[in-house]
Length: 304
Ligand code: NAP
Image 1: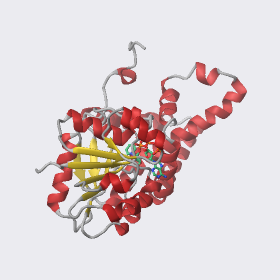
Image 2: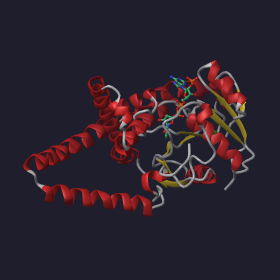
Image 3: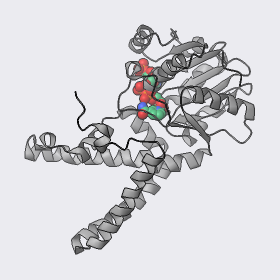
């Protein structure tokens, strides 16, 4: 598959920075240009050597054969508008947004006909943001989901897939609405639950002084990691994946009520059966190579 000669990164946070690092690690020789909204981020990205950092999206995409939109979902429309007049004919435009239908609606109508728009979402991230948070291994063995429109040129899709594979990812294609439903289950609602639980504990902390922090055992500590995720990114995720989030949240609430009832009635059989089923899911994730089998994610015995 013909590699890209010039990759433009619009937005220079965790994901864009990791793309740049992973491209270098893979030995891809493409020219990398990039831009971010603020001078401070552009300066930081330049210092990290992420590529040729320029002031405007128009300058960044001029002559690029791959443009990757790496801004929050709510900023995608504005980014598409800014790059549209400067895109080279035949270029591929993609994005890394965590929601797909809203991005398709925001970006596709703003792009000229002479480019291919192939939305994407690498299922890889951390609770850190900004260019300094990026690292070359972020996409290793993680899925990158592409949601090409039905009329997309298969060769352009295969070329983008090969790019992500070179960065270490596994690639799958699916329909945008299906992506949004799957991600509501696997990522969006779990984040909402973590945000809620940490919020509840924070309220309690006022009552119990520092106990919540001092005794934060693994369960709560894992919630706090998720709940430390970027507020802008996650605000945009919920605002733009409203339907699927509310659907899954409704099912979640029903299950929660069922468990609440089992606890009230002392129905140990129900609780045990439920927890046995969920434990098997963790085993499945480990067997699929998507997490470590080490106890407590390998934190036990780890120094520092
Ligand atoms: P990030 O580290 O916070 O970086 C965001 C970048 O977008 C920054 O360069 C920022 O510029 C720029 N930006 C923010 N608001 C903007 C606006 N209104 N207009 C133009 N530029 C703006 O974010 P990230 O974690 O890399 O996430 C980027 C995208 O990847 C998001 O769409 C997110 O949904 C998706 N994603 C994230 C993860 C994750 O776990 N983090 C995983 C998969 C996909 P300044 O710094 O100059 O403000």
